[in-house]
Image 1: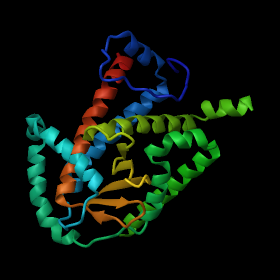
Image 2: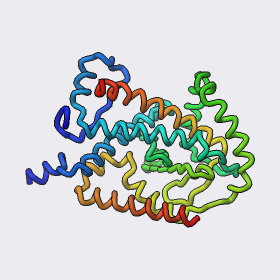
Image 3: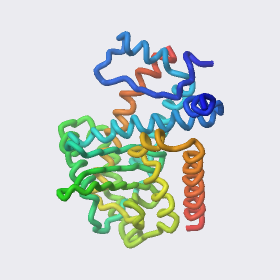
Image 4: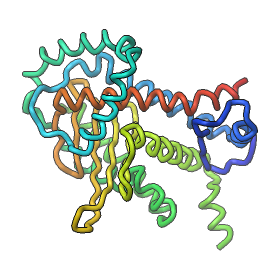
Amino acid sequence: MSRHTNSGKFKTPQGEQHPHSREFARQVASLTDGDVRGMEAYRGEVDAALGRMFGPANRSVPHDVFHPNPAFTSGAAVVAEATANQPTYYSAQGVAHNNQGIRYEQQAEKVSGLNDGSAMPAVTEVMTNISSANIDQQMEASEPDELDWKMTQLAEAYEKLERARENA
Amino acid sequence: MLKKLFSVIMPVDQQARDAIIRRNILRDCARMGGTLFGSVPKGNRREFFCLDQNTWVWHEEWTESNGMRRALTTRYDVRPHGIFKAQDGQPYQPLTPEEAQRLYLAAYQYNLKVHEKFDPLLAAVHA
């Protein structure tokens, strides 16, 4: 059942919109069941992803010295500065950070020099092709078959990645 | 022709519709993620998003002084033994602690923004 037509279009409310505004009500009314499922699923994925970063899955951050991506470093530094003014962030996550910080050091030697990206180039190549930055162009320029093909390629690349992980 | 166009806009298959919705969500959130790092220089394009539970993606496009357009996609894989990154087909490399820390901050802020976007809508839908 849909609250409206299944347009496949997705728009999130802008920050300035009031939850009781007419625009907000319009957006809620226009959401399809698929939109709701998609939002719930993605929100859950992001929660899980964050949990993996702050949880047991990432107790060991490698300690090798590599040159980080300058774009990321310069941009993220802004976030770091902005976040530094939010003590609640550190109080909420500080324990995990501290605990993990200790573990990073403990695990550093095990990870040092590890490079098991055998299946990764394929994934990265496909990722580049369908990365969000290109989605507009993909949606406009690609035939559905081509998109399906790319999604298939991505799925296959992930399967390779999973097999590589299992065999590692 | 009209039928073909209609099928592109509104695929009958639920799985295809869900895929389009997910892609739109990713696209929207990627733009949002790109704003987490401050203002983007004019002509640049920056996107940052969570691809799945194990993967974060940074995409940057810019124009060099010689007018050449450049793009760089960085993929961060969160694995049981650490976070690894790959850039445009290069082999994966482990992160430095500094970069990992910045990635944590970015991911944390991204998560907050996603909740800011979705929670009111979903709460209203389920009310």
